[in-house]
Amino acid sequence: MSKLRSGPFIKFGDYALQPTPVWHGSILVVTEGPDVPSIFVKSLASEVPFQSSFQVQHLDNAGGFQFFRFDVSVPAKLGQGAIVYSYKIYLGDVNISEFDFHVAGSQDVWRWGFWSCNGFSKETEDTKKVKFAALWEDILQNHSKIPLMLQVGGGDQVYADPVFNQPCLVEWLAIKGKENRRDAPWTPKFEEECSKFYFELYANHFMTPFMREALARIPYAFQGDDHDFFDGWGSYPDYIQKSTLFENLGRVAYRFYLLFQMHTTPNRAPYDGYIGFNNSSYSFVKQMGPEMALLGVDTRKERNLTQIVHPESSNMIFARLDALPASTRHLIVLLGVPIAYPDLQSTESTLHIIGDIKETANHAVNALADGIGKFFGSEAKKSIDSALSVVKKSLGKEGLMSKLVNKFGEMELTDDLTDHWTFVSHRIERQYFVRRLQSFAQARQCRVTFISGDVHVAGCSFFESAKSALPPTLTPPSKNVPANRITDHRYMVQIISSAIINLPPPSIALNSVLSAAKRYTGPEGLDEDTIEDMEVIFDVDVNGEPYKKKLLARRNWCLISPDDIPGQLLFELRTE
Image (cartoon, rainbow, N blue to C red; front, side, top):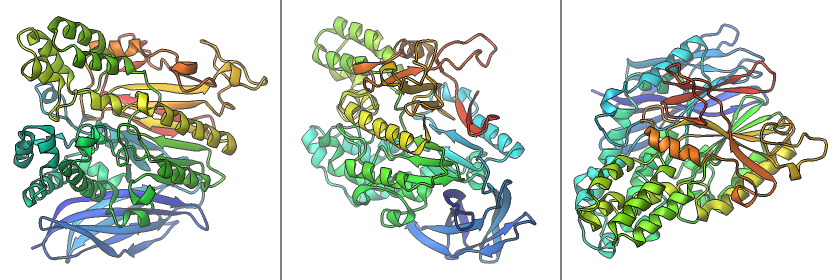
C-alpha cells in the first residue's frame, strides 16, 4: 500500500499582476509505493469561488521514494484582503493530507517572515538545553493571528555537515596526502551512502513538529547557504573544491536541495524561472504584490575563492530586475551572508600568521587570542578554547593545529572568512554589486533592502550617501544626523536575523565583533560616495536588562509587515 513519506511542502512561485491577479506556486509530496497522488484545491472565500484539481509531475525517484510536484495557480482577490485556500492530497481514494494557505489581494502589502540557520551543526550539551522548535511555534502563533503570505529561508535550511560521518567519507578522509585524496574515485558506494544521507536529512528534518505544519501552510521561498550542502561549500581551495569527490558530493547535495527546497531538478530549473549563466546557478526574482519584489541571489553554486556570483549570472539578474513592474517600490535582496557587516579581515590575517609561526607555541597562543574574537559564527570556537589549554604540550596536528586545521587540511576558520563579502578577494565584486543596486534604486525610485542570516545574531546595518556625494538639496549626514534617507538612493538597510534554531555565539565572541562594528568610509568601506555603519536598535534585552549594543546574541526570526506610514515596511526582530 502506498503511503506518504514526507510533505506536503508548499513553495511560492510568483504573483502575476496582469491581466488579472494570479498566485503561482507548487506543492511537493514524497511517497512510497506505486500510487500516483492527486490534489484538490478549493477557495474558502465566497467572493472568489474556485475549485480545481491540478496535474501531477513526477520529479525524481530516490531509493524507492517518489517525488511528485503539483503546479498550483489560483486567483487572488482584486483589491485588498487575503483568500484562504484549502488543499487535499490523495493516494488512490485515501485523503493523506489536508492544509490551507493564504493568498494576498492584488493591492495588499504582504505580511511575511524571514528566518535562517534552521538546525545545529552538531549536537552538544548546550543544544540539549534549548527548546528545539520554540521559534517555529512563534511563527505559527503569529500566522494564526494575522496570516503570513510568505516565509523566506535565508540559508542553512538544513545542516548537512554530518555527511562526513558516512563510512565512505570517513575512509576518504583517512587517505594520506592531498593528491591521493584529490584523485580518489567516486564509487557506487559513495553515491548510495551520500544520497541516502541527504534524502533522510530533508525527509526527517522538514517533518519536525511545528516546522512541518509551517512548511505545509505558509508558502516558502528558500535560498541556500553552505550548510545546506556542507560547511564551507564553495570556499575551499581549487584542489579540494574541484576534486572528484567534492564535485560529486556537491552534485548529490544539489539534487536533494533542488528537490526539497526548490521543487525542481537541474534540467527543469531554467524553465521554472531560476537564473544562472549556462544554467549553473539558482537565483530568482519573485513579485510580492504590486509594490514589493524579492531577489534571492545564489551565492553558493558559482562561488570560489575569487568569485561569489559569475558576472554573466549577475547580468542576468539585473536584466530580470529591469523587467519588474513600474509599481515596484521595494526590492528585498536575499543574501546568505550579510553584505554590510563588521570587517573581519584582521582575523583572516591572524590565521595566516598562526600558520607561519606554528613552531612557536607562545606566539601562536598570543596571535590566536588577539584575533579569534574578531570573528564569530563558526562552530570552531569551542574547539579553540580547549586548544589553548593544551597548545604548549604539542604542536602540529596533535595539538593546536588539530583544532585550527579542518578535516581537509585547511585552516578551520578560513572557509568562514572567505564566505564574507568583505574578504579581500571579494571586495571588488561587493562594490560592483552594491553600486549596480544603487543605480537601480536611483533609476526606479525603489528602496533596496538586504536581508541575511548566517552569523547567529540579530541586528541592522546600512549603507548611505557620504556628504560629498549628496546633492546640495539633501541634508548632509553626520554621526548623529543622517541624510534625508527617503530620497537617498544609496540608503540601503541590511537586516540581520539568525538563527531560528542554532545557538548564538558566546558573549566574548560577540563583544569582540562589536569592537569591529564601526563607521566605514572611503577606502575602508564600499567607496568614497558611500558610508557603512550599524544602527543601535535595541533598548532592552529579553530579560528586561538595558541593552544598547548593535548586535543581539539571541535566537530570532524577522516579521515584516506594512508600517503605519504608507509605503514603508516594518521589520520586527522577534527574539527568544
